[in-house]
Length: 352
Length: 142
Image 1 (tube, each protein chain N blue to C red):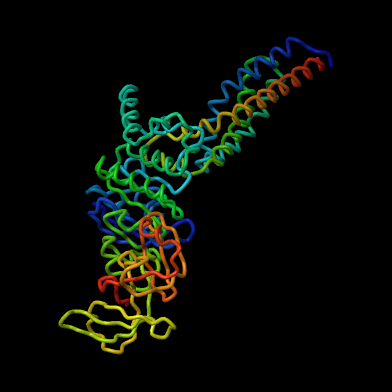
Image 2 (image 1 turned 60 degrees about the horizontal axis):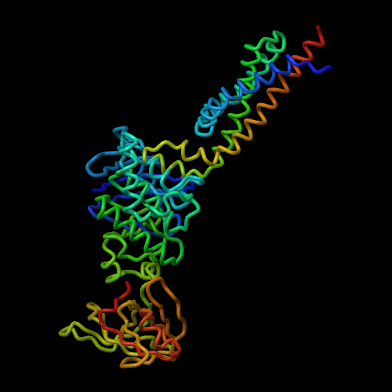
């Protein structure tokens, strides 16, 4: 378990005032640049000393300001993978693992290194200069090096820059190996949500050094809350709407979306308690729940923009709607200008 | 000034022996200097130390004094070089290893090996020339 209550100041003037308790096996720590993500990781592993507070990891107090406890980074059982470059140049993958292996005796060390190289699929790269490998393999090497030291907690700082599908896969693999293969708790720090909210059991949003939100990725997507979170999540289309009808019995409502635009459209939505017919609201429509197809039923929408994401194609339409389709759904209709879109009521969420 | 074989031979022996002894000392000292500000101050003081020992070595002309002076000159020069090279390495390398409880110098060594060996060769040449100059001046003045 992670139990933190700290105040900390970073070298670049960034400040952290965080209170966080977590039983999750994996956590995605997220927020904008300067929100205090890296500072929190550094405080956890002992590379940054908090001004005050207490940090307990798996029942062991590793920092306690008033009691004067500050366990050194090497004795905390917390492995840290910095954003880049974490692997020393001119050192092979095998050398990196050997360096971090704590087993006594040359034979046992060699056995553990070879076993982990095999497990991580790094055997064929074992003799290569680790710092010259592609980013995905570097991440795998850094994770394997961390795991061979048998930590209780693995911290990974911003491993994914941009929308590199291969790197995201490597990150998922590293988390899976740590959590399921070695029973190590993982905290991954990422600025955006491109790595996927399902990457970890728990998602933590840091804003201005404070923990603004904590919950599972599914909870976040289901109830994004405010517009700022929706924009950060980048998984919804934000649409202006007017309530045409409310049916408390069926727990449903009917909306006129984009009423002031040239392409207004109607959509079914859940019931919004406390709101009246005719009220003007803003709703978030979850892209991955919206069904878009080149033919079939639905609202005809003109395609405005197509963006390729790691695992899907993002379609944006001129009326403000957006949908995610798989490559298989996209390919047969890639030349279509007009797509048919269906909006299930559960895809629509009220923005507060 | 005529070529003096015994002085040249003594200077060469001094330069090689002093550089060999100074190299590990300088690496360890340079490592401390790059990490610790108090060690950096000691490093500055170390640069002042060779001068009187070098004068004593020139005056006595013995291998022991020459060797001592050579070690001091070489350690001071190489430690400064090593500290600068270590400080230029990316800090995430060391931070990551620190959390793993792994020694940092084996990770840094492959990147430092070539520039440090070059610096050691230059330092050996410098010690050789300083020793030879002192011995030749001493010989000429007697």
